Picture (spheres, rainbow, N blue to C red):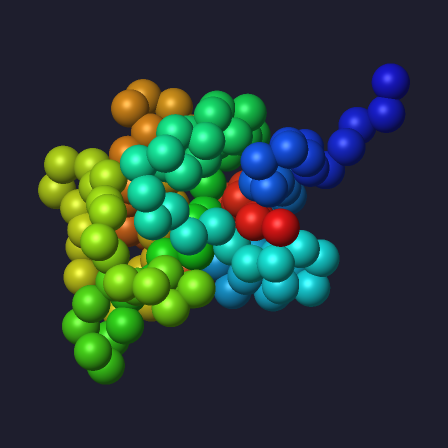
Amino acid sequence: MEDRSFICYDDNLILVKQNKTWDEALTYCRQHHDDLVSVTTETLQHWVKRRAENASTGHVWLGLRFSCTLRFWFWVNSEGLCYDNWALGNPVNECRHTGAIESRNGQKWVSLSETERLNFICSK
């Protein structure tokens, strides 16, 4: 049986099982698919949680970034944070922090340093 680096789903979400920094994941998604996933609704959160369950890392990158200049969180698709699913004690409003979802244990969002190397979810 051949190992695959990602799993495709009909709902336009792809879990990429490669460990990349947030910037590397963003570049990969934009080059090979559309973008890092922006979770703007509870329904989309449900599907993202299901993909994250299959990750090989404890967290999975989302298309969520903190703006140091403007001091707020935003999605890479330019939408603001109208829907959120932060873990208790998050978000941490620090520069060079980006958003990830826990792959297990509640699957809430957390703020992590953008240099960590995680699996990630692309939208297509």
